[in-house]
Image (tube, rainbow, N blue to C red; front, side):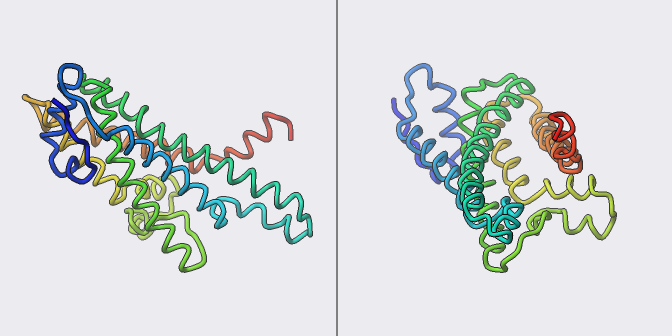
Length: 229
């Protein structure tokens, strides 16, 4: 028996998709899933490239244009676009594979099954990033803090960069991701659903802490010291 994977229908009917995924190795096939997978992958990479072309993340190249180093500036923009494409690919791989592996280890559910759910999580995060980009493009400037997160509120409570960056990772997309993961994974849980929710929230908090730690570290200075620049 085949299951026709349609993004919105599958998202709004987690029990049906969960059943199809759970029986995928027997007599169920997810028709149309791979096409949606590659479409989302293409959209993710394209989005990161578009942001780079607009100038987000490549501000350090401005001085080349100011110094009339046009050829160096053009090469730098091409390299920035290439780096953005790689970043988009890594972003997709991180959420689709690595996060799914972590959830599989903590919950003992199938990695293959959980990874199917991550396509919805990636889409929700990408949508939030798209909203931020549109606002930044219309206003003509960017900020390190997202207005769709708890970051702006935390700035009224503390000046600690680590705390602000941590709360900046707790956004609307984070809440949506937790809701999506719990909605699907709870279809396979017969015992403690409260523990399942705790594990899912714990993973998001852990990665928010890691991201905040990386954000406050002077990585550029460390790298230049290591390579002797």
